[in-house]
Length: 365
Image (tube, rainbow, N blue to C red):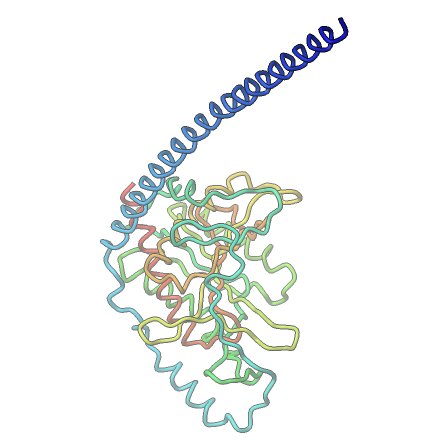
């Protein structure tokens, strides 16, 4: 009896082991089947995503190509670098003849700032966003229309200088000196403004160049310029574009002055920084800032398409700088105090060419 009982138990164990093995096999099959379905779905989703992304890329490429074709078909500035430089040449020669007696106040470093501190980019437009909360999609702004109504027989552009005393080095040297600053107002940002206005006017557009001195003291200069610019705009409602032309300043901890510069047609050109602001935090009373940013991005695009290295990234910040006065207002820095007058004037001509392209774009709309 005991032997039979043992045999039965042994058979039961074998059957239980078989059953357990079958359950294990079924579990493995079930698990594999469970995971194979999501894997198939995942593959389909990835394939769809790739297809959709490819279509978007193709669409974006077509848009960029059309934009480039449009700008490339516009007439270029035939008189590039053609402003009268006789007085600048004389200034340079006088400075060089007295260079041995000039005090050396520090080094100058020539640098390319066209790709410095970029936080957003699309096509040839780069942007440096210093705000904490505002996101900028450059492509979206390029697809927006500029808010401007250009009448060619009336003033359409206003150029002024909140800091008209900002100046440049007289001649190109390896060092800077306070004795080499072109202190006469005709050789600072005012002279660059003249070149900018001359270029725009050469295409038949009317420009007002306000040469009022607002920085008798640095404090309150923007308030003073705001009052007078508001008056000019009331008297000339046809003005669509307002440019406050400045010069930047970049000094390292060791006292080295940075010159933002590139080369076009064998000539050194001061690099350009366009500034656009927004309403954010303590900055209020600027509800239409997105229209300003649209204009700034279109202007940057026009400049960078022709001269990629001339444009520094757009400086986007939570400030007003009187940009709220019209939808198409920008603050522009041409070079730094380490750039020369000649480099700044060359640069202003190229900026004028970009402004003309945007004006023609507005006429087209």
